[in-house]
Length: 153
Image (cartoon, rainbow, N blue to C red; front, side):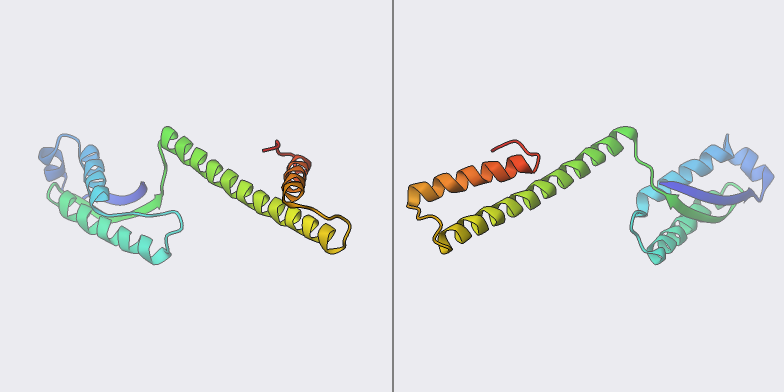
C-alpha cells in the first residue's frame, strides 16, 4: 500500500536523540500500522478509505509522537503489487476470462445444435433414429466449433 504521510519534526532534540534516523523510524511506524489496519483500495468506497486513513493516522501519531515527530495525516493512495504477485493475478484473470468465454461458446454451440436438429426433424426434412441423431449432433458440434475458430472437441 502506498501512503501519503504529512508530518514534521516537532521536537528536534527528541527526534535527534530518540532514534538514529527519524525518517526510517516514521516509515517503520507506518508499516507497522498498515499491518494492523486493513486497507482495501481497489473498488473500496471513499468512506472505507477515509476510515482506514483515520485509523492509520491515529496509530502513527501515537507511535511517532514519542520521538518528537508530529504526524498530521496518513492516507492510503494506491495499492501496488510485487511483480510476481501482479503476474499471478494477471494469469488468474486471463484464465477466468478464458473459462467464461469457453462456457459461453459451449452454450451457444449446444443451443445452435439443438435448434438445428429440432428444426430438421420438426419440418420432416429428416427422420433420425438414436444412432443417427447422435451422429448428427456430433457432426454439427464439430462444424459449429470449427466455424467459431475453435479446435474440434
